[in-house]
Image 1: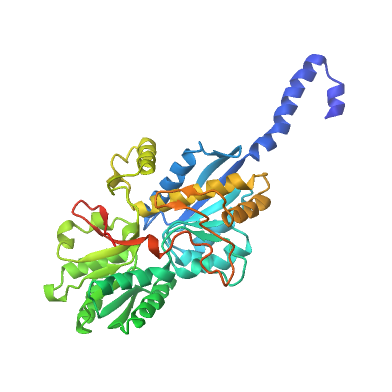
Image 2: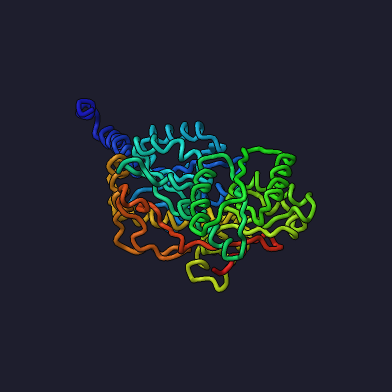
Length: 412
């Protein structure tokens, strides 16, 4: 190119230099951009995935989507709740040299199935919802998965303890037949054993069950003399069981103490207040809600940003599946602090490693909606199994749907 430059006129030299400047500056400009992937189920649990997306975007918008001179953009991938499809999305992320971080969605099975792939390929994975205990526990010290959510290593314990405090003594465990369900079977039965209580029975169901099968399982629960149902399932199956229960004789209806999977879809909008009025339903949540009064200054600020960014959000109840928004916002704020500490270089491998190390060694507290996070993560090892968990059992509460379909947190 220098040979050509020597053989053109001065005027030509000026024009050529402008072109050369553009050509040679383009790769540098392109390197100042990173992508955050969101691999979630935008089909059957759309509300939770959209909520996570909104929480990430609001947190990034506070930085104008620019951190350390790098522009960040969000890429959404729909795995439809399918682990193989999720792996293909992760493979696409690995091949994208501008891909830096992946957020997951509501479902645990894709993370459990692909955990080895994630850690082997050094995929920085942030989990704002999926709760299965093994997700953040690696078989060795190489662990790239960080969670800010409920952890089933103690969620089942919390649900059980709260139910026992109410006086229930013969729970039926009604669990989806996945790694998530099996994780809760372990913690729930263990918590019951500590009180010298055994479940009246343990029943399993698969995704997509019909209402007749649901009725059969509920009738069997009553035959076992159960006095409460511990439910672990998502919104689609939760809707089937509640509809089935609403159609049963009143003496068969049992209280339900549920995991939060039912809140990830359109459960409250599909199951009418009339269908719910005779059913005692509570579920686990973390201890923040935009409906809580009085609101903190940060909560007011974040809601104002969300309502200005999304035309469908006019009141706090318009944030559907709030858990996703809240956790994703807090987790993104922690990520932003880690990125600032890591001093990005543009080399994805180097930057991913630097952010991972920064997450494990944050020096500055991060103010979030649930709480202020002081060193939320630490270096993982088999002897430090909770190292990649930002929340603990102290951050959990039980909740219920009110007549306006809003989630109301119960005081401990």
